[in-house]
Figure 1 (spheres, helix red, strand yellow):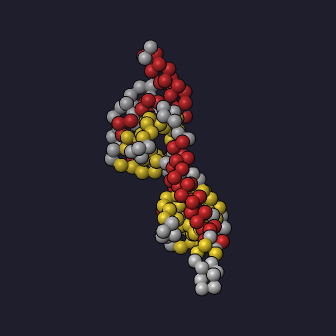
Figure 2 (cartoon, one colour):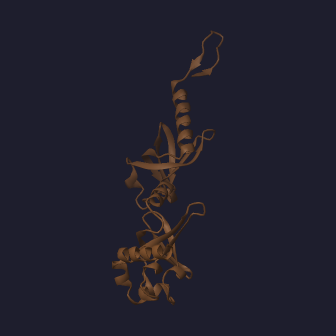
Figure 3 (cartoon, helix red, strand yellow):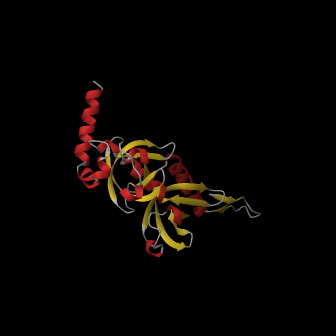
Length: 217
């Protein structure tokens, strides 16, 4: 690539490095546009996240967008899969995200009206948030049981593994709705016999689907 025009002696200044950089940015822009996966070799870290190299360009993954956030030094010399969060050639700024990639992968593994195993991570008065392996869904209090639920924290424990039915996946609103009440044989069964309901969740969901199919005939 010509980076300086002819001088008084008729010589032009060339740069292979600049050519490689421009080609790298073209590749990055295409990857960002298509939301493809990219590999970054981690070369350093700071309080805000980890730095690395992608196609010869310096890249950064913020701590909040890392899957493993506790030991940043341990990530040095590792290759991380991520997607492009922000790419600005004019500012030489390339920011990546592992979290978004993990979320997209987790959502792709879920199916509506199917069972998924998750971990209770947070309580709110209106429901329980469940981690489904990289993405969080809401088990609304009205979807917990056909019976009355007086206390969510009395029914579930933080860190507890439970079986849930994926009710709806709304990627536009960034929302996953969950349910357990369709696993009940009668209103309030989950409250009375939660362990049994969880152990036989697959059979219960199959029964629920069969009954719904008969109703729709």
